[in-house]
Amino acid sequence: MHSYRLSKDAADFFDRARSWRSYKEATLQEPVLKEDDAVVIQTDIASFYEHIYHHRLENVILDLAANGSTIALQIDRILNKLASGRSFGLPVGGQCARVLAEVMMTPIDQSLSDAGLIWHRYVDDFTLVCRSQQDAYKALSVLSHALTDYGLSLNRSKTTFLSAKHYKDFISTQLGVGDDSSTDLREIDLHFDPYSDNAREEYEKLKKSFDKIDISLILSLELEKSQPDAFVVAQIGRALKFQEPKVAEQLCATLLDPKNLDSFRASWSKIMRGIYAVRSQPDFEAIFPALDELLDKIPGAAPHLLVPEANLLHFLRAIRFARTEVRGSFVRQTYDGTSSSTVKRACIDCWRYWRDRPSFIRLRGQWSNLGANEQRMLWLAAAAFNDDGKKARDQLRPSLPQSWSLGFESSFAAYYESWAKNAL
Image (cartoon, rainbow, N blue to C red; front, top):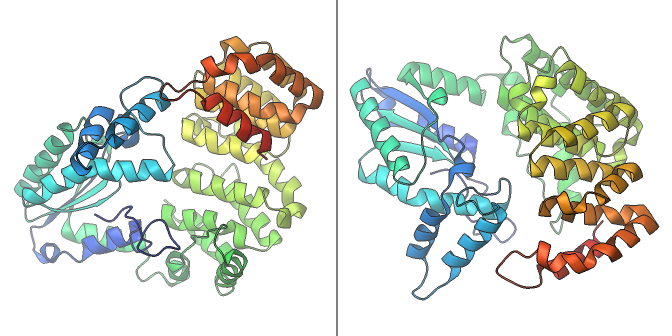
């Protein structure tokens, strides 16, 4: 198991030695790979976070808790409320969700070890190392049944069988073994904690580490490949905020060029996070107009890339800093055309940043038809609209305790109202 484990170092929440890279490197060290008939299976869990069953997670936590503990029950009730009454699904992205997901996988990991399998896991990705094709099918069956016991299933479209040689060659390419042009970039730890005691010093140190790396050249080399390396492109996306403004502008122009969007689609989330990091920092203000122009071309040039909800949310987050005619139309049509509460909330957040008064007034009139998440975001947005926002809050305040109650306390609305009053 190579994914999230709590760190013994007080400076970090998770152990940094556990990573996707260490996961892949560990699989290459398996002695079985030296055998001629060895077979490696790569697979993952279908919609992992979305399909975690609350009741089974509650029982796993109950096994870990002390006698008489109510922690498992409390977590189950909170998750049930967050999932709008459904009995499955974890919110994606939070540290708590990562911990709970690892807790959920613990008995499955144990089952694989008890069955004598050679296995490695990073979150929902599995690698099974087997001595023969026959053993590989048996191992896959064991994994499939272990997952089924907990309401999970394999992603068939991402399940592949590789010979030991092909696997070693494939992973070596992924990790950049022997590729001098990108090895240094692959090796850099791009984790940066803005809340650490030495944040500025850490930032400058990380920024200096790019002095000897020609990222523009590396990106050009990736474009020449029939299939760019997703990990390298993701590293470039993470590295954008550490570049000088002009270099960042050139890199963004390449990453967001309509001709390249499909080639880089596997790294969309990392690219958009990098764009967001650049667009949110005053140090890059000189390139904001060029960056905004690049972003405005995406809905027309590659609308298919904005169909997956996660991709769309990353894009909405990147465009919320400034309103343009293209964005105003895109966000309005997106809001009116989606049934996703999460997407609607992201649209309202754009209107909040833009101080889009007409959109605020329109939604204020639809308050009773909005979901609780949308109402809370609109309440937060009200602070941007001066007297209109103040009057709206005064009128709506009496309805909050009932409409925003989570069911396991009586004052969530008051807590949220207090937080929103001081929120940036």
